[in-house]
Amino acid sequence: MGAETAVEAIADQAARAVEEDRAEVICLGCGGMSGLAERVTARTGVPVVDGVTAAVTIAESLVRLGLPTSKARTYAPPRPEHFVNWPP
Image 1 (cartoon, rainbow, N blue to C red):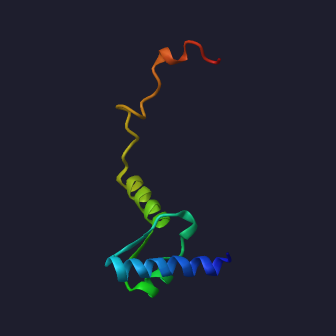
Image 2 (image 1 turned 60 degrees about the vertical axis):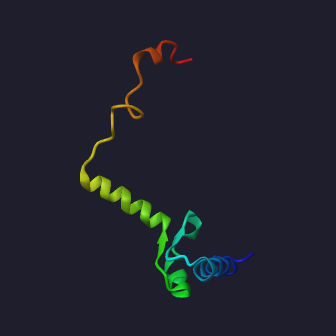
Image 3 (image 1 turned 120 degrees about the vertical axis):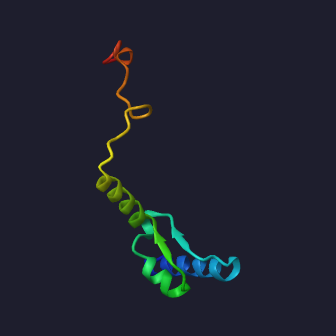
């Protein structure tokens, strides 16, 4: 399948979602679909969210907020006992 055929297949499925399922927005959930939002919007008439652009925008907003990485749980530094037999 060529690139243009793939783009047409994506646009076709998006148009079906709008027509048959009454979708009001299309979310492109694959990095390989990045850059297709404008073409799919033109085809469907509904807003299209480019997942890569959305993720970058969220990351940029978090940086602008100046929030540090949490140290409370998941991102806390390892406890010293984890290094008892380190390196293996």
